[in-house]
Image 1 (cartoon, chains in turn green, red):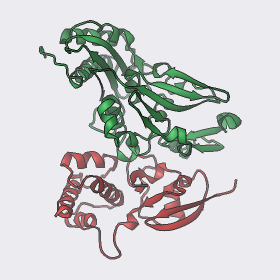
Image 2: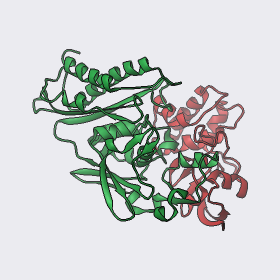
Image 3: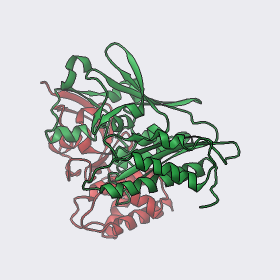
Length: 277
Length: 157
């Protein structure tokens, strides 16, 4: 149907963007396809090695599963912060990604968690890492006749954990001024970084995967100085704008504070300690 | 285009209706089924005045297309009282004067009921977070939160 109707068709997952846009006349699709009726797009598959989340699965169905909280905490940090409860009951992580807002609260966590997107076209299925999915503010790399089927997150390594934080002026129900997610894997003694991934949102047209910041930690000892040095790399990559939610300099400063804090939170969750804090 | 024929369950009763694809559940509840307890505040999912539950999960009726309720179980504010007997939450809202103009009240009641079904012993902070999707411009929230906590305490007895 997507191929037949092309840009006239819209896929409905949670509807928290589409229905609002239809109502105010910004979007006038001739066909609406409810993807929640497609089994593959509406399933959660949790195995020992990975988590597969169908593109239409709501935030709430994710946080209702305690095992996901335990194994993929950054994802839970995100889906419990997106809107209030009625929005979480409907809004999907897949929709958050496809909507490709620079501030999308699920996207940094997906990047940190090494998620990949499974995409279906008229003839084949392809897969891209989530960090390559968004192409601009509100734009993604899906072709007109393609749609997102699912997101696959590999089981994090031993002695690792993940975390997501965002800054908003209010406690709840707001759009991130800056958000950031971290994934750290520590050595058995939890004193050295084996690997790390860092992603920052709302500081560029797309959520940023700051690969260099994570790489800078490999083999380094788990201490504040190294965490701060990694955060400085994220700050150097951030290229935010001034807008109603925050200024360039505020966002630069927030990038530093949030990346430090989210790294520390991930380290703590992985069982690591930082003595000099 | 032909209208859609939808078969659903509302407050335990089987219901059939015809709707256009772009009509929301809120449009159908209010305009076709004359269940006007759910209010339209913002029509964009920000205010929670149209809160209902669909298959046990709290949603904004303005952000659900009516056709999506095919085969679903919908609960609205009209299903809350048992005939003339108010639900304990409704009674506590009156006792605590947890409403002034009343437009947000049906949404708060439906949302609070879904909280207490999931968590019969919520903390104040849990109540405030659960109800963060419901806006009230009159009460300042304090009386609402107290009414919910008081109901929870009474229902646990």
